[in-house]
Image 1: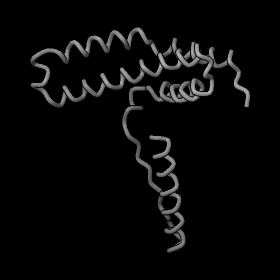
Image 2 (image 1 turned 120 degrees about the horizontal axis):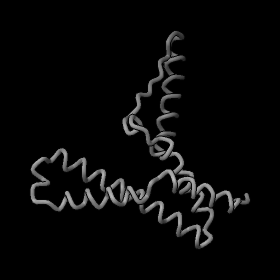
Image 3 (image 1 turned 30 degrees about the vertical axis):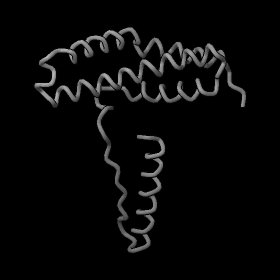
Length: 134
């Protein structure tokens, strides 16, 4: 399987323009400065949310820098994996996309066999979601 290097670089540039990396770095710096304040931990719930946001921002910035490094070192397979992962993250970066989802399968009519089939389907899908880390 040949990877089109030019297409990979174009995808990276498109992601870079959508990702607003400079904005994320500025936000990270602001949140880190807030976390250094003495009164930061007086509200543990908001402090925890802020620390979670800091961790997410650091991971995003690190991933983008890693893609750039992999492309510059001609490690295109690894770069493609990260770019594909980041494309999904950008696709699911809307206001409500941070929340969870409800997934259920009901047998309806059909008795024991339908219940068995629905439980097998449910297990198959949940294992798939776990492997995808969704």
